[in-house]
Image (tube, rainbow over all chains, first blue to last red; front, top):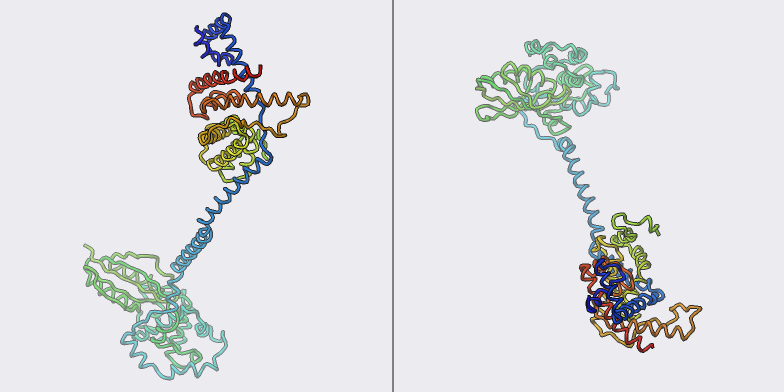
Length: 357
Length: 197
């Protein structure tokens, strides 16, 4: 090895980074070369001096000085963020709460608003010609009776059927109206005694076929409802009272006119959609109309629908099941949803007569 | 303050990792811990690089501030101290570029912060300080690249690998620079020794 080569290897000689061959070469050269030995000694001394340099200490409060700058910067950063996002601290929660409130309100209205709206603003019911005649022919005494008899109204319980009706819940209003409409359509009158008896007999309802045959007789009214509920019976009794002024029925208020019924009170409506498939649509329609007449249903809408026809009728809720049974004899009946429970009230039934190939 | 041993990060073995994580979430108190731990070493590196104590303090302060600002960029691939040392060296190099090294101001702390030795006389102290000043002068006469490897290896004792990470250099380059730095320092100090003789 030459002295120049040794100069390049000496700086790392003591660190043990040389290969064994290099190390042997360096050691052999150092043993023979005085200049390189001196150079190596100077190098070691320089390194010792460098390594022996004292460490300096940080000045007093050096950490505090640094951290003062850091905290200042951190504060400015936070302040900048706050400046940009502070409004959002308020806005975002308010907007979120407002959105939730609106959503909940909308859901509540969707779920519960429809019946409420119906109660507040009942739909006007057009009067049929017979009903108008009935209004016109209604005895003045019957209309005046409530005012005259009101002070002498017997306490509740004197006449279970009649007095029960007097304080009946809104659905009975619907029954009353429906029965009034039925009367006005010229079905028949029911005497008070019959109505009371009918109530007590309600569970012993004759079969539908029998009731259909008895249409026009005094039992027909009760027979039309397969399982007439108590309110239904009370409604009939009341109607009977209003129709025949006399006896204990005088204590009852006269039935309101159809117009009053339409404008006042709550009319419970639900809608049932039926579809009947028949081969001969016109004939099926005739049959259906006949059945509807027997069931005291009132056709409120009639329109053609393709090759078929749509009839929309109002019928006592308790008679829907019987009607469906009767319609099943005419054609294949599909019921859109569950039939209404046989409670008081009127339901609207949409009957679509479709042509079956 | 959490136990540093417990806080030791298992993947990098960096006991600063927990505090670094807190710093990344904007916790200045955690950064204060890191400053307390590393301020002395960073100051010595800067001082040996710059040769002026006051300027070194300023450089270290700026370097710590840069570290705080850039802590989000630290990915934990190396030790925090290695990353921090790289920042200090950058600031020191920038500082050296901005001014010419003042040979008369060696930066030796000539105040009372230098711990007096009971066995050392005042003359001996002066001689030692003079020697240190001359050595520092010799270091300062190296070019920036040689100086930083010499400071990191011979004064601070970093490994070649760590120096390579700090300076983003291959270890072979670090070694060759160190050869040249040591030889150059030896040549610089020869004059000092002749004067002292």
